[in-house]
Structure formats: structure tokens, C-alpha cells
Image (cartoon, rainbow, N blue to C red; front, side, top):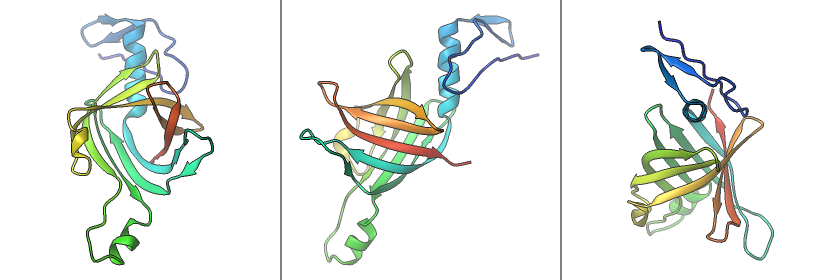
Length: 164
């Protein structure tokens, strides 16, 4: 019989041992990682994407989008300006904007970082082979992924709501 004690949510896993089918013991760190991975799995819609310019203030990028994390440590994300279809309809040239990419995922739970290892991107070819590092937090059931510059200043935050 397989017994797995996993807790999702903001609190760390309280159990120090997880028993898996064969009776193998997992460390508390492995249990914490398993809980974080399980918390991420799902489909999300973009609630907001804001930027924080160096001079101060907040800019609403007025984006819509989707992101998905699966149980095999993969992700895919797409986002675009809400007005992109209208701009494209009014233009006689190709109008671009937004992002689309996919790849594998790793977590640094101690620093609350999820890294998207970009394997493909039709919209941002320069991202292929790069890592999109996101600082994550859960707030009121929302997943917030923040982008930080080399100095550690938050330059943007994408807020996602899980589809139920």
C-alpha cells in the first residue's frame, strides 16, 4: 500500500518522513519540494502583469495569458497585450507582441525561485536555451511570479489565478 503524506499550501510539510511504496524514506527537504511541485501543477490565467520602472511607479502592461505546470516538471506559457488583435486588424503589416515559450522547470524552494528552462519559443527565439528565473509567492490563492534584475530589484510581476 502506498502512503504519501503531502501537504500543499503556504506552510512547509510538517512530516519529517514520507513513506513511498517500497518503504523508502524521503528527507524533509524532498517532502517540501514534492509539496511545492504539487502546489504548482495546474492551469492558470493571467490576472495582471505589471512592471516597475527604475524611476518608480507601476505600469500595467494590460496583458492576458495562460501558464501551465504539469506533474512531470514541464511548463508552457503564453501572453499578449489585450489590444493586440485590434492592432493587428487595423494594420496592413504583421503586428507582434507578447510571449510564448515552453520547457522544463526546476525549483529552489529555500529562495522561492522557479526556473523555466526555455526549450522553445516561437515569439522570443533568443530565449531558447536560456533560463527564465521567477521568484514565486502564493497570496490569497494567487501565484505571483516576479522578475528581478541583476541588482535584485523587482522589475515586473505576473499574477496568475488557477483554473478550477
